[in-house]
Amino acid sequence: MEASAQSRKEQAGDFESPGPTLTFSNISYAVNLKKTFSIKKGEEKWILQNVSGIMKPGMNALLGPTGSGKTSLLDVLAHRKNPKGIKSGQVQLNGQFVDSSSHQPSAYVVQDDILMGTLSVRENLEFSANLRLSKKEYNAEERQKKVNEVIQELGLQDCASTKIGTEFLRGISGGERKRCSIGMELITSPSLLFLDEPTTGLDANTANSIMHLLYMLSRNSRTIIFSIHQPRYSIFRLFDSLTLMNKGQIIYQGPGAEALDYFTEIGFKCEPYNNPSDFFLDVINGAVTSSLETPNSGVNISCMSKVKDYLTLFLRLVIHPCYRQYKFILNRHENSSGYYRTSAYFLSKILIDLIPNRIIPIFGLAAISYFMIGLKEDVTSFFLFILTISLTSLAAVSLAFFVSASANTFAAANALIAIPYVLMMVFGGFLVNLNGMLNWLSWLKWISIFRYGLDALAINELKGQIFYSNLTLFYGEAYLDQQGINHSTWGFWQNEVALFCMTIVFMFLAFVQLLTVNKWK
Ligand SMILES: Nc1ncnc2c1ncn2[C@@H]1O[C@H](COP(=O)(O)OP(=O)(O)OP(=O)(O)O)[C@@H](O)[C@H]1O
Image 1 (cartoon, helix red, strand yellow):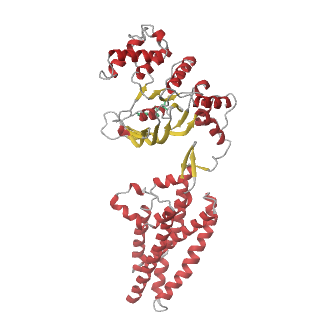
Image 2 (cartoon, rainbow, N blue to C red):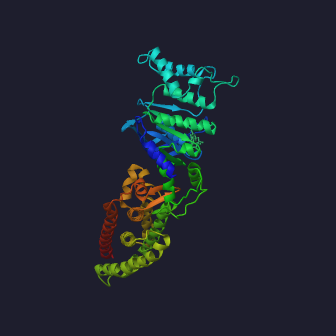
């Protein structure tokens, strides 16, 4: 591979003049799987998911197993896909935004050559020139000159007068056919050339010569972007940039010569004499496994969704006993009337009940379960976890105090207490994604103890973590953003402040209610 790196370095400086740079960000593309003749909207199939990257001047290869989304990405970049299916993302050419309405100096060579078999190579090229070059800019002589230039550039002189060929008519070879197809597009002098699998159906030598031709074109003011299936090593060496795709996502983008080093770093070693492109496909298919358990600092992506489940379960464990709290307070304040002042009862309740019954058990529970669940191994995070759980528990128990103090009978308290808890649970962010909630109900999230608790726990756990799926990295922050959770420092502490304020407010209201109950008795 050192030899290849060396040759790449040599090639780096061989641009006569560089082509344009194409960048794309957060491209998501989906198709609607509507049944034929059905009026109902079908299910959406996501084909590209938030892909971003850069295609620099030179040879840009898109590689991946079949169905990984190479052609779809190529089509989206070339603005050949229905804009309705493009759910997000932008494409820029040399820093300028482009869309399907922009005039892009690009051309697209499709996989199946569209040539007229009964015409010769020259006639096909003339056909393209006559239809596609404006008569105002190019007169007949100039159009002919352009055709000659293309024939010259693609090395088609020997077969220029030979017919392309049909089922019944023997014509030019497969390689010449592909060259002619490329020529049909080069007639318009595009600076950006897209090709969908230009080597498919060609034998090894012809594929090699087509790729060398593209390489030569890429050195002369053209950026070449193409999808390709299992290229041999001599072709792989020609790639300036490699984009590896799997299941609609990009798993590597960077210089072709550095791809092997990247995979070695994350534990996938290519055996000597193995073709790098075969090796990459083996890695994607799972035929080669990593010698590292996880990428340096990463955690398996499946943990990301589990984290939230665990945190919710934990919250429920802590909050459920609070829900039952009303039984005690109801009994107590009925019995205590006349024996001691309400304030004495209330204070003793806080000191004796809240601290030993709520906070201390949380320490014990957290100390055991925090590490068993496999949450972040970090002292600060552990104590912030305990603080959040404690404040959530205190807020929930204060609410239970308030509801039970407001009800005259046990049955009423029993019925009343369920309402706020159910509402808070529904609008806590676990059952429903709060971003997708009806606008007029969105205010409910601001009074949900569950939400504050869950948001604080999610930030504490996910911020700064990197998860991976196959070889794609996901940042905890990206997940929090997707859930609409503010993960700044204040974003975390505002949840703690809200829980604290709710505790104080509910305690105060509970005390006021207790005073009223006592007076009535
Ligand atoms: N219009 C469509 N309707 C349904 N599924 C589609 C549509 N277009 C693409 N797909 C699916 O999207 C996935 C990606 O397709 P795409 O043609 O981009 O893959 P590819 O990597 O180019 O595959 P190949 O190498 O076999 O050409 C495939 O599973 C394909 O079946």
